[in-house]
Image (cartoon, rainbow, N blue to C red):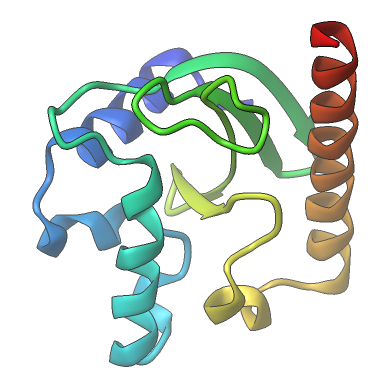
Amino acid sequence: MNSDSEIDELFATLAQAGDEKLGSIVYGYDRVRPAAQEVLIEMLACIRSVFGQRLQVHVRRTSGPFELLIVQVPWKPSETESGFHPIIIGGEDSHPRIVGYVLCFNDIVQLFSPEDLRHIRVLSSFWADWVESFNRQRA
């Protein structure tokens, strides 16, 4: 599991950095073609605040070397209609990097072993179960 300070640093970069620095928080960013890099930066837009607000971690779950953060994004409601959003992170160069949301980003999937993808699917299943439980409790 990543430390709270590592997650805070990741979120600070997400909230405050310009597009040229955002690649530093995406897993495998330097190992994909420029067109894919553009897509990866665009994928971060849905969890970036235009006002520099930071995400708040609600739930953390690990599977192997990956961690699911269920974060509250009050400025961007999600399918739970509550502002919660999944972020999957994995370590690279001793720093947490964003791997994807419900699954890993398509442009970096080739960077993962079958075992890595199994761990990512475990976290995806946890997210789906969490959303179902959350929605049941609200009903």
